[in-house]
Image (tube, rainbow, N blue to C red; front, side):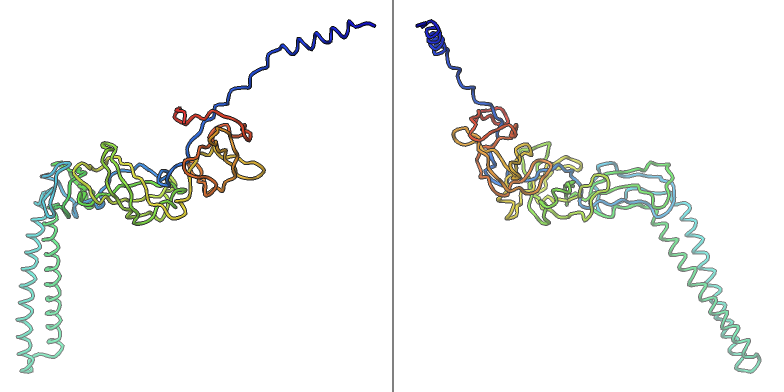
Length: 360
């Protein structure tokens, strides 16, 4: 009996048993995030600009040559304060001429009254006809109308003399001035802008997809970029009914309730919209990359306490520029994978790494 082949087989089996077993592959690193503990962590924050609530652009009502400027950029002004003055020589001459016309009209009117009284006496004595008396009465009416006309014109001319003085129409600060002595300006040309610093707004452009997060009279938090340590309270005062044609964003004005001297016009400010409705309190904002679809169901991969990946069906809300809202299926504090979710399998052990690179 030939036992050599059997011996070779036994030798091969023994050799195979001595081969070391390969260790299992190390856990795969997975980029994860913690679901926000509160809904306010997903509150919308936008950048705005400090603007005055009231700002008026002023100019002269008449043409003229500027001879004096009494304010500069940034000058505080009071209502009625003189800012710019025009040369009043021409308007003074016009006023003098208008007063002369008034005196001439008054003399014509007095003469017409005297002539009418004389004609009435003659008519009573049958020395003139009724038509002659009617003619004198018409002349008196004409003289009276002429007198009223020139007086009105004289008042207009007198007003034009006052229009050579450009005065502030409100308390505030000069934010723009384009007036130099010797400059000739047209009527209605904008010369000065005055901003009322007692009422300060923040102008914010809200994307159309986030307008649902903005409510009229809602409370917001404002921080200046120049000093982010201090927070100011604000309230949504005005919401534009139409989007800007270029940016497709809606202009929203927020009024600061506790503005102080540190706030300057034109500064950049961050506005945080903290008001949430009842639905949004149950929503969690996650990156779009964390959401996948399994068997037609929206799914998020949750990393459990044993660092195992578990698929979980979720109900999604609206998609936004900064992610997607999860209406149900997640709880605050849970860890979810936010990268490579299409390559995960159920119960796969992973090495979770937070977005900022620190192991949770």
